[in-house]
Length: 85
Image (cartoon, rainbow, N blue to C red):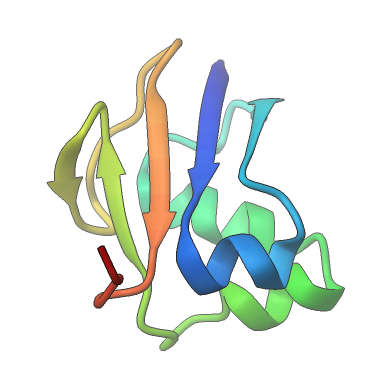
C-alpha cells in the first residue's frame, strides 16, 4: 500500500521533512501501525513518534485515532495537538 505522509509544525522540524511517499508492508493497516512502523526507523523518528507522545493524525483530512484504517493512496498527516496559525 502506498501512502502520502505529511508532517507539520514541530514534527516537521524534528524529522527534517514535511512530506514523503512510502510503500508500507502488509502488516500496516491502521494509523497506529503506521506510527509504530515509522518510529522503528530509530533516531529522531523513534523519539518524535514514540508511544505516549502527543501526536494527532488525520487520514484524507479527517481526524482519526490509532485504529483508523488506511487505504492505498491515502494522505496521512501527523501533527502536534496544538499548532500555530
